[in-house]
Length: 579
Image 1 (cartoon, rainbow, N blue to C red):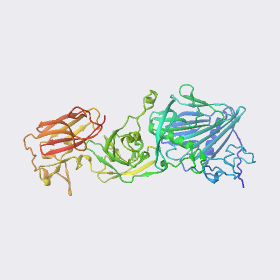
Image 2: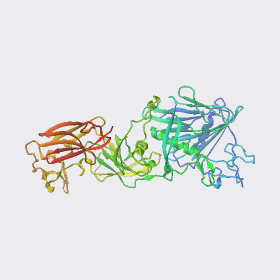
Image 3: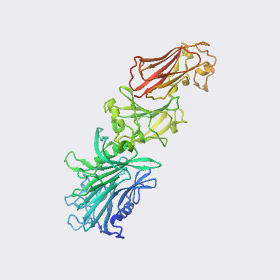
């Protein structure tokens, strides 16, 4: 038996304001929908922390951030409107390849859309339509000049939550406006998407871009993407875009993001949703479906991630990035111990061929786009240039200052880390605090004489490099100790930390001057440059390295070892050169 839904037109009180107020009623309908497991209510869409979209009483779709308002879309006005709401998977709103998509069992699919009319002439209203998204709003107006039918879609998936989809259909030519206080700029965007089969592909599209500025939170990127070729937007003044409806429905996506990379990923994901899914057996294609993608999977760290401090107050955060560039973390989304991490100074990518340094580009701003400056190379593209796309990377993020959650941590502590991948998938893991880099057995062990029983750890303060990582040159401050207490680091014993055994040990050079050298080595031990050789008495001296070898040739970007040799004692420090 067919189900009948009574959907009469609803008169809008206050004709002097027009039918723009329809969206207010629509918002009230949306608020009553109990199927949405979300904090969203009323006329509010929660897009990202601190930013919401609202359907207003005047027919506008607005962005709100910290109490400020920016109108993006104005749908116009009329005296009488129809409102409804639905959700994908709800009764008489099934879609896709499910047999239930033909809700009225008449052999046809979606022939009576949700608009309060009997479109298929069977005497019933809205009994067979395709609901789209986790939240679907329908708004229809009609006047003497014709009709306008608008549908707004929203999904709760993490990688789609920042996007609102809009589909407009008009029986006559009408103007629609998209407004922003700042200019819209048309530009190409690209992102790498990863399907459920693990096959990555580069997706490219184009969109109109602007920003939403807030005094406290800075810039939020806004992208307006025409999803079909018949939707053409044209500038109509400063900060305004217009398009005219025609016989073909116009499909658009409105996306917000905190960074340029996130915006590109969200825009390309929106295009995937619009294209939908194609059945490989029957060849039938259905638009507006979220296809199988790795973005729907939460990724747990297979092995605990790690943090190692250095003597300069910073350290390295090491993350496992399994094969497939979709698993590469979005560094702007990492939250360690409930505190957001800043962007690292450099990223070391350690794969089958060893460690290589990837530079982190400055944050791309709207002003850069406005001036026509090229967009930064995304991290996934840089890593792909270092090795095959199937490579499993170990990413070593270097921070000049230890994150707040780790500043008081000791060896063995575990801190939670959350974030998202470059394609929007959720990442979650645990960071374990390891031995500090300053007393790493592989780098900072002093060989005291030839007696293994007297081998001790030299103090890391005897050699410090700044800045590290560096681009032009690094200042290396070396100190020749005058006493054993000054020479050696505290030694951990069963009773705690002590240097008692060392206080009676004489320095190899006694009261004289040791033979001192400072040399640069590659990561595999090849000597590259001698910075200093000679006799030095107790005290400090400074040498510099400009990233060249003994022949004056610039070395490649990457990690290098600086070794301070004092007679039989030596200390090694890692330096990172970024060209």
